[in-house]
Each structure stands twice: as C-alpha cells, then as structure tokens.
Length: 122
Image (spheres, rainbow, N blue to C red):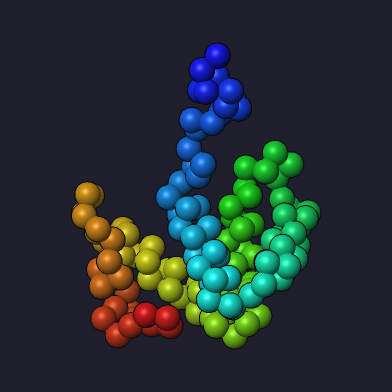
C-alpha cells in the first residue's frame, strides 16, 4: 500500500475555499504571535460567534464567524473599532471594483470620498 492511500479522504482538497479565508487565518495567527490575544481568548471569541442563532447548521459560514470573532477581538483590545473596520473594508471593496481585472488591488485605487487620505489602519 502506498503512502498516498493512507491519507484521509479529501486530503488533496484545498484547505480554504477562498483566499480571504486564508488571509483571515494568517492574520489571526500573526496577531496572536504578536501577543494581542491568547488562544483561550480567541477560542472564546470564535465559540461565541459559531454559537450564534444565525450560524449555518452545516458550517458553510465558518470563516464569516472567524472574521467576526477577529473583528470583535480587535475592537475589544482597542486596536480598531467596528466602524474603523467597516470603513476600511468599504474602501477595499471600492478599490476592488475600480481595479482592472488581473491587476493587483491596491487601496490607492479607492475612488471613494477618503481616497488618497489614508483611513484608519492605513
């Protein structure tokens, strides 16, 4: 029996369905490594999110809850308030829509009202 046959089903499947999920995961690990929060704080925040009544029973929205937990910790730790996160997310969204296909999305491409002035966390 080859080593490949010993691997669990789905082993070759991508770990993350979308690039933003990998980025959220990496940000969480990096912020923990920087000492922003402990793993028990992270587990508590993520647990609170996945236990919300609107969570999907099949878990397809797991990384949406992951991201909400991260935003919650950023707010609780005073790093970035929810409005700061929302403002920056909207700027990235506008920049993505303004960026030609195949080109890197840059915050400088945001055509919105605060374009070029840098916003929270920029």
